[in-house]
Length: 510
Image (tube, rainbow, N blue to C red; front, top):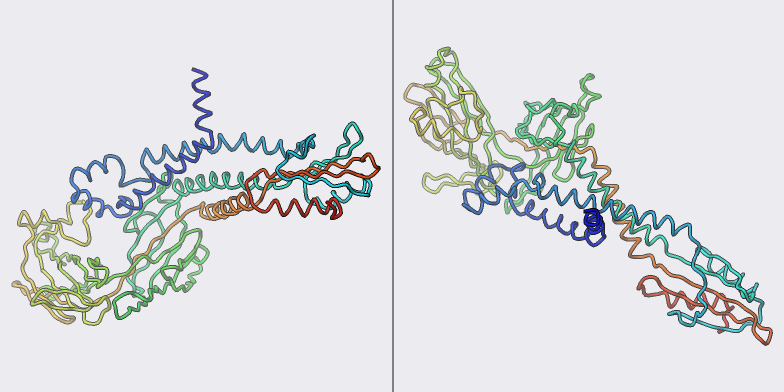
């Protein structure tokens, strides 16, 4: 049993296994980019499963729609960490030991080295060794005297190549740990805010968010306190309908300003997030919220501006549902027969095909809505959450919610229902879609990413090489100088360096 465990450990902590696991980790991350992920868009996941039948359901069972939290991805992740630690620690100890070790003895037969030169000079061995020490400035070197009195120098250079290699692998390990810390203690939340300054968002728990993805050790109560509101939204479209500029003009309060009441201004753009108190606020998108008013027979009036979601990202044709609860009715049963929903399509720049509404441009050039007015029980009193963009289809299927009118309306247009209720299309407001991200390890991710680049750059650029010099007296009283060189890595350029060094040692004589 012990030999089996020892062999398994050696196999797991080998560099080959680490490289294989690194490749598998990259391969395992591909489904996260190619397939819809439940944490990002649960509706897309549901649509994908419905579209692909048994294959979609199989991928769901295998956790392909939640890749980064899947068992198999976490297993590769943990094995890679163990493998990296297991192979890096012994290499680090060996490298530290090698740094304290003197360069190897000068070989007896330098002529067998890949690079070799031999000369006879008039200077003494001491002068040759002095020139060699000067030429080899910056090299790790050791002088020795052989038994016959011949003096030698053993020199090495390029130890930083292995340093770069170790920095690269330790930075890779640090990057993995930093990413794991981010997943444990970070969070992301998305929120839709009206772009007219009327709505204020404060990071005070989970409830203010429209969707929230906490880290594994986050309960949503420890977020950085800040508040913000969108005063206006600037957008510019090219003639093709492609956006040229998105900018949400924010006012925000960081934690230090919450008590003073001071608001700071910031122009939030797609590639220019707002950073405050360790959080980052990103601009993800924008859309429209049609404004409807309902005037009841009693004369009471209610106005709603619920956001509708774009169904066409090019023209921003949008769909949604604006829901009204009748005022002044205390009887629950009666109230559930008079609730109203306005559903349909909003076209920023209307284009009609008969009575069918479409949009030809994403900007508000000629807004129009095509709506159905539903009356009855919206199902909002049963205690369950509802999708704000649609009505409960069960209410329609059971006849408890019925369509009472359908019409296309321009701003200022209205529909009068059979009971005297008037539904009016007042106009359109803009909303922006923001994401709040918190990652306590983001600085370390950047540091380790830079260290990876520096480490791999050093390991690729720096050349590991050795050089030996032997100087001894000849029979005629002169000095025989031998210089041998060996490149520890297959790098071009050492031949030229060797010629330069050997010429400096011999005084330019060969």
